[in-house]
Amino acid sequence: MAASFETSPQRALPLCWALIFLTGLAPALPFQAEPPAEHETPDHQDKGKLERLLSRTRQEAALAESRARRKVTDLLSSTLSNNPTVHSSLFWEQVAHLVNVGPPGIPALIDALSPPVIQFPPLEPGLDEAAVARRKTQVREQAILRASSQSLSTYRADVAAHALRKLANPVATDDLVQLIQTGTGTARIHALLALESCPEPERAAPALIALLDTTSKPAVQRALLICLVRIGGKTAMARVRHSLDPSDPTQATIALSALAAAEVAEVAPELLTILQGSKGGAAMTGVLAYYRAFPELLEDNDHLSALLSILVERRATRSQVTAALELLLELRVKPRARSRTLAEELTESRSSGVSELALKWLASTGNKRALRILLKPLDKNIQERPTYGAFHSRRANLLYEVGEYKHALEGYGKAILMSYTGRSDDAHLGAARCHARLGKFKSAANSLRNSSLKRSELSDLPNDPAFKEMARKKQYWVETFFRKIEELPE
Image 1 (cartoon, rainbow, N blue to C red):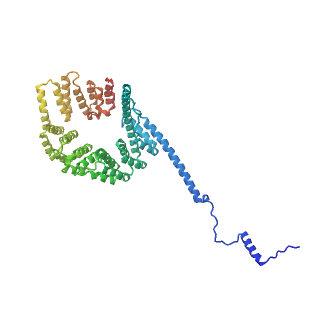
Image 2 (image 1 turned 30 degrees about the horizontal axis):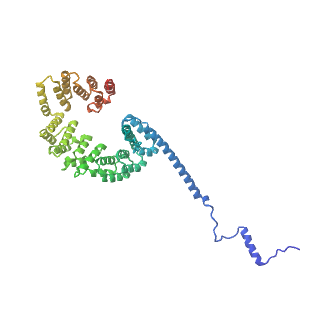
């Protein structure tokens, strides 16, 4: 029986729809197909790559910081001396090595600014004689170790601070500011030193100003002002100038000493305003510090007259008047016009110390009358006892003070001839100073060789202003003078 393909219309319609679906000719229907899995989208693939890249970058940064921290620790630990010398050649060599470590070493350098406090075991217990003796020994040993540790930690912190200062990287700004706000003592001072080269002054200044406005300690105020001056910027300098208020001499003194330490010569007008104000004498300490840093200001007759007016009118203390005259004598400032009249008034002061200093100052500027007045009593003593070497030495000391080095040499020569052996060291030293001032360094070294000064006394002479230039001449200073020191007994 043959198969029949005929079908009814009711069965044909579903069959047609089935054929349409099978051949892909179906129209778009209102339902949506399921999206592919989320991890298969291009956006998610890019996000995954970025996260892997960030993770790898973090790992590399952590590894670089770990290596840098190890280098910084090794470099700082290389200083094992109990008495390291700050700003020596080794000091700057270590600073250079730390700078070469680069920005990855910044966290370790910041940690070095505030080293941990050394912890000691508890003291020996017991009340018997042996325990008490052991406890005393333990206390002495701990005191020695504590002092040595503090000295070494301070030195290393100073090295780290100078390295951070040279790096001048903005990465360190926030951590340094936080350490300044929360730290104390040397940790804060070293953080301020490191922040002085901050490349973002407007970012660091507000926090420093806020701390300056709340602290009452002069040392902290001065350190903050020095840092503000050195980082610069409009905000910082505006706050510094605000401290130069003539009506507040205490703040003005701190600000002037900070400006002098920072070597900023931009506030001469404000300084003159302070001097001419009614409270100028109270700010004298800061004023003198600033004039010492910028002595050329005293060549201006307005500045010199304002300073001398305070001294003549007794608006400063005795010690401040003495300090001012000693500075003028040291700088050999020559008075002119009104300032000369004020200087003459000071020579007639009822205080013998003030009048003598004023005469020495004028004599150092070439005033022959002042020199004659000073020499008169000394010449009288020599006339009465011409063979007494001490009188010749005193006269030579005066001539040296006022800059008459050639005449002073003659006096020291007479004092040496008339003094007993071993009692002419002052005269030999005075002669050496005169030779050094005149540029005769070999003669100065010979005078020192002829003295019987101790090693400690000779080793302090590089700090003497008379030997400042001589100290730079290796052939005279090292080969002659220090050889003399090495030959001396301890």
